[in-house]
Figure 1 (cartoon, helix red, strand yellow):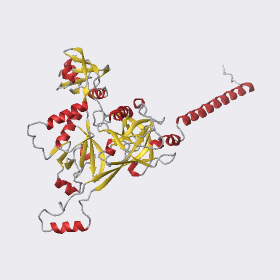
Figure 2: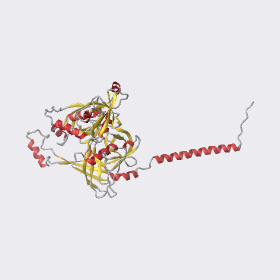
Figure 3: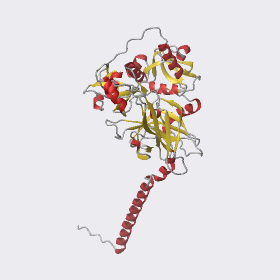
Figure 4: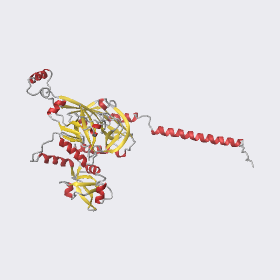
Amino acid sequence: MQAKARIATPAQDVSHHRFRLAWLTLLSALFILAQALVAQARPESLAPLAERVSPAVVNITTSTLVEGRTGPQGIVPEGSPFEDFFREFQDRNGSPEQPRRSSALGSGFVISEDGYIVTNNHVIDGADEIRIEFFPGDGQPTELPAEVIGTDPKTDIALLKVEAERPLKFVSFGDSDSARVGDWVIAMGNPLGQGFSLSVGIVSARNRALSGSYDDYIQTDAAINRGNSGGPLFNMDGQVVGVNTAILSPNGGSIGIGFSMAANVVTKVVDQLREYGETRRGWLGVRIQDVTPDVAEAMGLEKAEGALITDVPDGPAKEAGLLSGDVIVTFDGAEVTDTRALVRQVGETTVGKAVRVVVYRDGSTKTILVTLGRREDAERAENGDADDSDESPAPEATEQSVLGLTLSALTDETRQQLGLDAAANGLLVKEVDETSEAFEKGLRPGDLITEAGQQDVTTLADLDTRIAEAKEAGRKSLLLLVRREGEPRFVALSLSE
């Protein structure tokens, strides 16, 4: 039997055509709607936000009086027959003994209409004159002198104050804990002394730790260069979520790895500096290390979490009855995941507060009430005990190899050879292992390391202490401030096991 051909009627052709037309119309509408949604999600310009917050962003210029070098030392040997000649030559051409001023640039931002300004401690450290240059327009003052209210080297935060004739434009802090990886952020400041500048990027990572005990950095790819230090990192609501502090770079310029101290850390520091002129951190008085999986298995812990107490010197913990070998699992009601978390939790707790510390001991948990001391008092007492010791100090090592570097402390002779100021301090890089991470990250002989763990280092013993503190706090790397021909940059080196 032959199949019958199906013949469409004119009415069926019209219906089919109408269906196709309706379907194409719907697709077109959906496409137009999608384009509109994309356009709404991506603002055409950041100019309105920049115009709103920029009047609160300031340039900071510092000036330091540096003592000049005396005499012809380093030019000719002492006692040389040419010594008198060079002294006479220097006298005719201006005495090198005259002090001179050294200037530096940075950024900051106003946080109150009565003139409080936040910046980095390293921007104003050692300065005897600080001047604030304001964003032009809107009736703002052009430039004002500033005084230091307080500083915190541990988080690299400083609080300044200016006296203005009228209320100043200011910005507010936001909740940095709500910042998500991928969120848009804006960095503002004074890069390389070029004046006000804006760069945009995203939050690249959260909760970065460089070297300090209280680190909580937001990593961003927004361009941050020298001079941006102390400037704000804004979210898209115009709130400050970070203070631009450091970059990782092999050449000193931005390669898209910048770090801003999280606002939730900064606000606590600023509140204390504003009220007391100094920080007042809680102090538990224990030495701790992370709980590794093998330690957890050996102790019968279900999870490799908490902070294992390795030593209990004299202090609040010892008075309360904490013991070496205890594992701190909760502190003041909050779970302790690792040593870094505990250090921050203790530091952010009010001095003198009685807190409940739950420890794992001998197969069970035990709650102990500890009244916290003040870390700053403990550090001063520790330094005082060392200074008052009747024992003769051990001779200071003159050279040491660590982290792939051969280092020595500065002497008057090396200062003169390198053309450094008499007041310059730090550790001189004499050799660099070419197979080391330090060499890969650009360190070379002649570099000067002036800070480790965001604290000054003047002796090899200082560096040993910074390394020990970083390891004690569970840090995997140590942040060094390296200067080459006067230009600073931060370099993070991994700590060896």
